Length: 180
Image 1: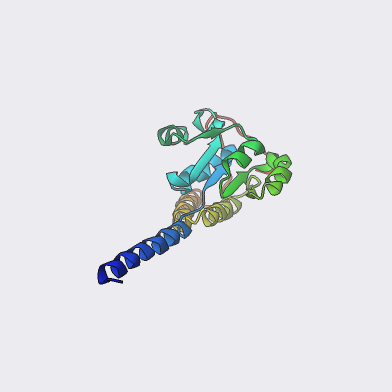
Image 2: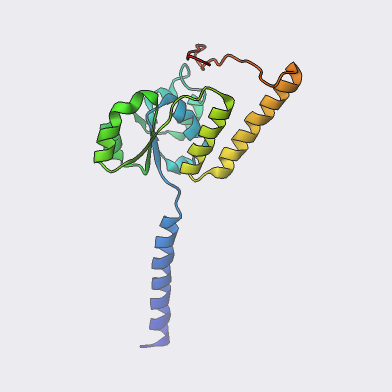
C-alpha cells in the first residue's frame, strides 16, 4: 500500500468520523401544535431546528411573531398528531388542550412535551428555561429570562411593590385565564 493510498484512506476515514460526529452535535428538531409554544420556538430555536409550527403562527391576530414566521417560511401544521408522525421531529411541543394527541405520539415513538399555561412570571421563566433546555438553546433562554426579570425589576421599582399586578393581552387584544 502506497503512502498516497494510506493518506487517502485516512482522509476518507476522518471525513466519515467527523461527518457522523457533526450530526451528533446537531440541535434537536421541533414541531409545535400550540400557539403559545410557537412563540417560544420562534424566539429560542435556530430556524434549521423548526420542522413545523401550527398555522396560527402567521396570523397577526394570534401571533406576536407572525412576521418572523412568515420571513422564515416555516412549514405550517393543522395541530394534528398524524402530521407530527409524518414529519417525525425530534421533539413535539403540545399545549394544555392537546392531551388527546399523546397516545398516538407515544405509539409512533415521538418525544413530546406538554406545557400548561403558566400563571406567574416565575412559572413563565421556568417554562422558558425548560423549552430552551430541550432545544439545547440554554444561552438564549437565559437571555430571555434576564430581559423578563429586568423588566419586572423596573416595574417593581416604579410601583414600589414587590408583586405588581398586570393583565396580559394577546396580540389580538384579548385576555383569558383563571388566577391570572
